[in-house]
Image 1: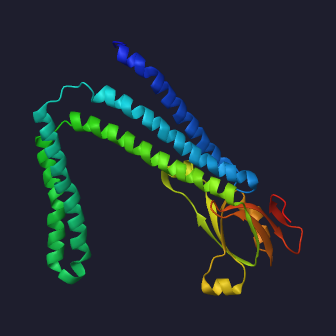
Image 2: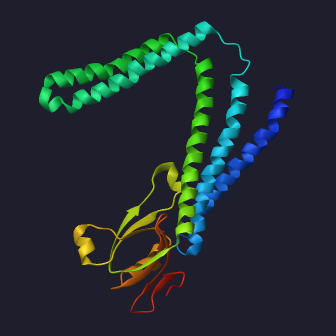
Length: 275
């Protein structure tokens, strides 16, 4: 296999190395947030690691985007006919895959009113993608131009989304730092389990989303007085305190971070000591 080194590739190497560093450090920050505690004053900074991780991931994608552009599109000969054929193929794919599926699902959902006509329409619409697929197998399209542009565009979009999400997460932490914590006595609580699924479950812990109520009137009116998000690993200790008749709770409202909780009439406590 030939090894080709050009001046342009050598110039891009430092940027690619920096992008890889940002990528792996960001991934490490996300992994750290997966296993870090969600209770205590330190938990506020642990939650910020999620935002930092996404920011670093976004920066790495922003570094990779121009490098991909230079490698795949810049100074590349563009065959106008091939490009036009690729664009037509994308447009046909939209009209022969996406729209028939949407119309077919719409016809199926209305079959209880339209009867056999709705079923026939569903079959017709859903047959279009299969017919087009058979045609495309006989006359395939190589998406050399638009495929490269799609990859560059994808990296650019991912960079923007990650940096916006990371900045929002970090701003929540800063809002809590500036606004400070709150402390109240609560009598009732409800908890829902948020169990991530799919690939996100590897980086996102299972959490208990807790709603706190000061009194029975708040419960009757459905007025949640405070919300907390507690990792499953920290929940047993926190639940023991909240199960008591009255619990004193200190928390950061924006990030819903529990600083500490204690039983008003007993020795039970969780998180940082509070008075």
